[in-house]
Amino acid sequence: MSHTDIKTQGWISKLPEAWQPFAILMRLDRPIGWWLLLLPCLWGIVTGANGATGMVGYDVFLIILFFFGAVIMRGAGCIINDLWDRDLDKQVERTKNRPLASGEVSIVAACILLFFLIFTAFMIALQMSYLTVGLGFLALVFVAFYPLMKRITWWPQAFLGLTFNFGALMGFSAATHHLNSFEPFILYLAGFFWTLGYDTIYAHQDKVDDEMVGIKSTALLFGRRSKFWVSIFYALALLLIAFAAYLAGAGVIGLTLLALSSFHLVRQINDWEPDDPANSLFIFKSNHNFGLMVLVGLAFINISPTIEKITGFTIPHIGF
Image (cartoon, rainbow, N blue to C red):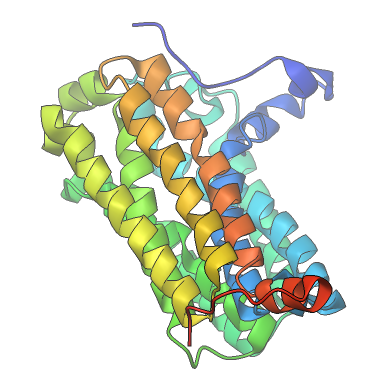
């Protein structure tokens, strides 16, 4: 197998040569990671704002802050992961050329960059509520210990789900300054199952090498039943997202838009070839489209009153 997701071409190649290994270390060549970190944040913000029609200027400001925060913290998380895994990465085809594993970036240089990124993320978090800042510190603990999980449990994807979806709680708390409702926690749980599904797909890229070097994953745990289990996780994610929208007062339009996102996940399962690493990577990357579809559905959870005012038609109300 000759397979890697590192991209040394494109805009990365236009950076000064000395910067390029650090950009690759932060996975700036692969935006899918920060997309998957950012989208639950946006789900939380729009739900906390009661949909797009309830958003104000501060909510737009939050979206900008969370965008930069997601890019920065995804980069920090990748550095932490690679510091833990640099010896294991040397033994895996897809990761052996990562900057720390290959020696292109030193441990000291990586730690300096890591400190700068975390400090910058902290400065961004200070623009939000104290509750959101506290959640950010809690999330950082999960980020720090996530790489250890693949050594001690067959469920590192579950720990990633707990880690990657703190944004649903942070986004909601930033928009509302509280967590006194069920919706953000249900969105967090929905994101957990979504991540458990898509990261199992991602783990199938490395299952041959992982088995040889002793790395654990749900891809190896589920084996040929992976499609079945990913289908279950995706179904739970969809049901929980719909339930959160229902609690937020979603009308027919919002729930219909959310229901349409289910077709994307069905197509993922249908098109996924677990024994093809390149196909697994392609299917994994398509999850940002699903996340965006959910975002649109949540943004329009309470659009019905606006449409009724404009058109004069009465649209059935489903939520509370």
